[in-house]
Length: 322
Image (cartoon, rainbow, N blue to C red; front, side, top):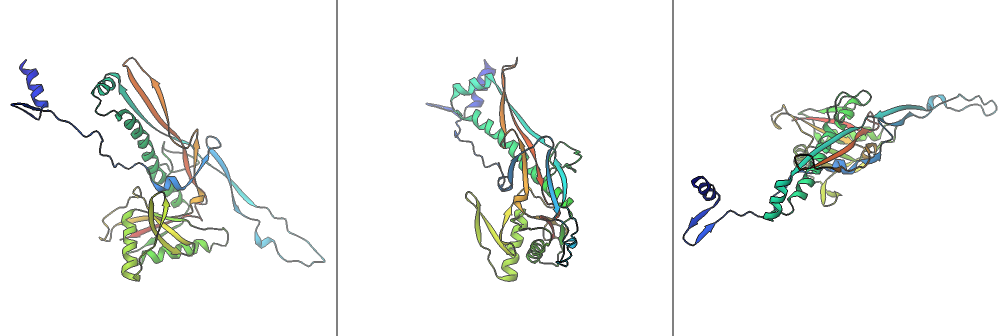
């Protein structure tokens, strides 16, 4: 009896004359956890053609050097042929599982304090799949599309870097000038019609850009809405005004201002970045039933993979030293 009484007393906030105070909680759980990123919402979602998902890319039109002017009375044309390559992207799986014990479910139903909790936890499980997906869209650690080495995506950052377009902004260089010049060089490509649509970077780097515009040029950047209720700064370039989109998953190394920090940014043509999905573009939830332990099991799964088309001409990596 003493042990039982001690347990009851420990659960009460106060026991006194005419009063027994027991702990109560707000029925809403405070939650501002990250659940999705703008990048995953803005790139193309297309059904996969298979595993791997295959496509063709035309790398050049018939060589203009072999087409030319001739004597109209003596036409002797040169035979030309377009250049096309076959490419593919292997599909990957992102999964998560949550179990509901029958005893805990019935106890929660009887207490009626967190009536929505089972639904919230299931939604959070799906959100966990999407967060893992969003992080891997940029940072997946696979190193090859043609010969996969890990179960993760080959991140878009790695695909762009593998394309070979990269520029370093040293501590003595202007960030904005380098980005604008790089965009101009991309637009000036005489082999491909390139129109970058966004710059993605960590919010810390975008803050440095904002500070540079104010201090060096006395310019305050305009803003525009890119997704529902989300406004970002716009940078005027030779490709028009393109958004500077903060993405928390693009991490940096070192301490900005120390001279040893490296902050990456990616100039991208979003129409040429695709997510090839299998089954459904969003995560699906499967209920596995009640095993011997009387546990409800739910598995959230998402099949697919991102691919950066034109990685060697339509996108650019910018590494900022600060």
